[in-house]
Image (cartoon, rainbow, N blue to C red; front, side, top):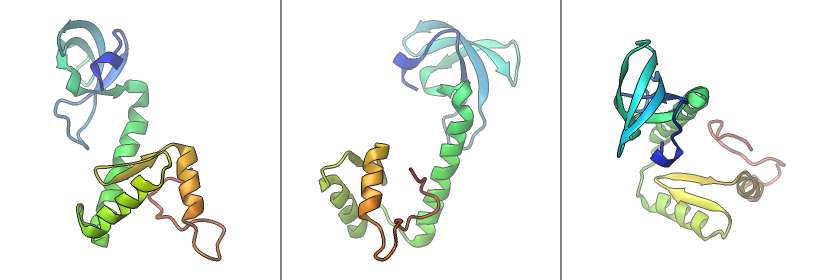
Length: 146
């Protein structure tokens, strides 16, 4: 989470080590100390403990942690599926796909092997990608439908 978006008094999900899949700890931020240091009170797993955390450890507001975990799980499943399908980052085919999306002139971005954009842009892309003879595009089940 960006330091500018952190608000004192709010509850956050933090990770001791910022690795996907590691468990969250629930803290309430009490004070900004300096630079990227924050004084925090633990709510779970060590209620009452007061210690310091760095901005990089603060992942998401606690109220949003379940959605964040779901996004992480979906990204992991998609990565696993891509690996099983033989996708290779940086391959000529991957580069061609990203070049096509970059040149579409729509609000679509390609970064680190992920394609993202506004819901409207994704809907337009999905409409263009439909299979002949079907009314719905053929998408992989791990890709969220808009």
